Length: 621
Image (tube, rainbow, N blue to C red):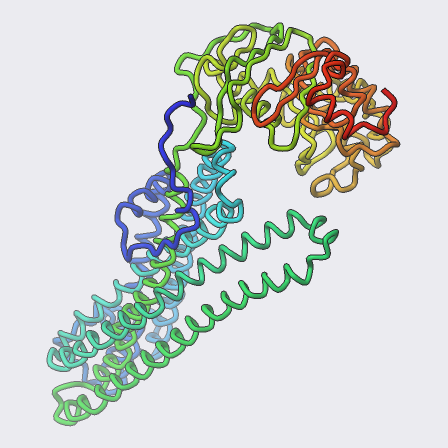
């Protein structure tokens, strides 16, 4: 029996997550990654307060100082001018300038300081946010990289990529937007205070427009909420479809599926386009509506304030100031509406990110791992192993056999008989019950997976090439594998000759998936990688199934050297590889059907005999 594991809903990675309007729990979790940069955020907050306050002073210099005080001489002593009149008088007297020129200089100074502090605010905010999200992305990558194979058996890689790339980018827009909102609402409250001081009745009339704007904003954003969710879903589907097609490009071209794949991609792309256009139409209409509302408010000010100016209860400068403050009253509501859309996207993105971060599926490690000796003998024992990937569908059924130290065991069987599953369990890519698999008498579940995988070298048929040089792909970042050790391993498996013929030898950078190497060269490189790591257990999972004839002899010679002195498990389709094995294990329907030497199984005339005649009837035994 396998250990009890919780039933997991992998479908949630494809589910439609809408996101709450404001998820405070999610925001608190985000603060964890921003905490190291709290000083930058604090400085950014101070700078935005300064910049916002200066933005309020600019229209006051034009209206109260220039128009009322200097040009008309009708400044209202009861109207708060924040000391601008006194400052301008001192500046004019100190420089010997006309007060209007001094006002122009003061306006320029305030504008420059406001621009500098605003820029400094944005840069410190963006710097802190980018660094915090960089740390989040690294933690997310680390978490996803340590999920077991069972996770990626059921979750599309494209969906995972969307979380690491697009969803983290959406959080950047959210955090940057929240910082910008502070800069919008400081002028709002300062302007509102000044307006109440000048004319409370007119201010209250204008404030009646804000609920209209707020309701309209809520209505339009409710329309776009579903659209933005669909945009994200179709974009994720685009990423997944693109990744699948590019990863399998050779199969696509060989099967001439380009037109079919283009049609599928076009359908998804057109769906994404439709939702993008619908959201753009709503956004455009909303923008026109808010502009019209703002202009109507200015018309109300001019109509109402004209009488006030005529009977001298309001100055001309104060009326002008009201018209300039309209933007400061309305713009924060508009920006808040825009940020609400970003908030919808970001909350959904945040839910997806933390859904992945909270996914706790992992290979269970022993609390106190067994310490392995410097060198293992290499005995492998499968003891009544039962295993299934999905409940109710057994893949291995009561499998038992022992491989002696240094023995070469070939495993054959029909497709789906469980050959590769044995290797995955031996490498502990999946959980299984205790007392089923042993290495030198030690239960595999008592050995930490990292320690185990250093002792088990696996060469797969589909050898994976990482970006980097030949040496990088042999060493795989292992500091114990020097260049000399990598070269020696390559020489041992006959890979050195073709490597030396490459333009830069071991420093040659490989193209994507190693396409500048032949299949045989990639396989020799795989052997060099395993030999450089020097594992006691060697597994060849159909590693010689697709070798070209030109390098077949090199491969066979390399195999002899590679398996020498090591316990070897060979899942092979080539007769020569099977014949050179000490014993052959035959699997059928997840059970051990036969086990013995090549000749013994032929004499038995059972399943192996049948498989042999079907696959190797053209070979001379």
